[in-house]
Amino acid sequence: MSALPLPANRRPLRSVAIVACALLITSGASGSAAKQDYPGYLTPGEFDVTQVIEPAPRKGDPRYDTDRKIFRATRKLVDTPRWQLATSDVDTSRPALMRDFSCAVGVALTPENAPATLRLVSRAGADTAGQTNIAKNVYRRPRPFHQDKGRVCQPVAQLADSFDYPSGHTTWGWTWALILTELAPDRAGPILRRGRAYGDSRFVCGAHNESAVEGGMLSASATMALVRTKPAYQQDLAAAREEMTRLRADPATPKPQGCAAEEALIAQRVMPSLDR
View (cartoon, rainbow, N blue to C red):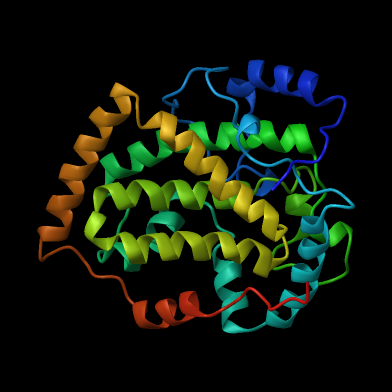
């Protein structure tokens, strides 16, 4: 897909954003879902995800029109069980993410029983969130409910001070999915499906455009490709892998509840068929 011409002010914005990367600490309600109280593995200015992801769609781009169609079509999901899952997925706290991925992993994860896993994802999440924040402040795209009318599954006041593209929620959820897949590769399918569904919840919710969800997944994946090369990450990964192996092997570890119902919702098709 060919990129549209970049805004004239993109390069200065990017330069400022990269220098300020370590200072961009925005949490859940304001756009970046990962709370950055853990140090990341990357150094400021080491990477620029805007060199990787597509520019945000603008008027005249077919992706822009598709985003608007998807927002309008998915308002049909309001008050359905899938809407309720999207509403639950609004919570970006670490205990909530551990709960959200417990069925996929096969054991009930908590901050108390998986501290090494929590540390690993939190540190990597500081990096992936930082990159998504840079891109948000470069592209500055309004959220979908500014263009079209329709209910949103969380208070819009929580979203008022941040931009649409890429999705910080999706970046955070996909960071969890990628790392948990490394820790429990035999559960890769369920984990990645849950990560994808976590992103889908953002356009089901109406908080993000679908292209922002794709952008969040790519932003997380691209950043993680570099994070994985860092010795400190590999050291923390080894500790988390040992913890996860022990946790899954222990018959005393609680099992998550409601997994069949969750899997049915995750398997549900939420992307509408659109006339091109």
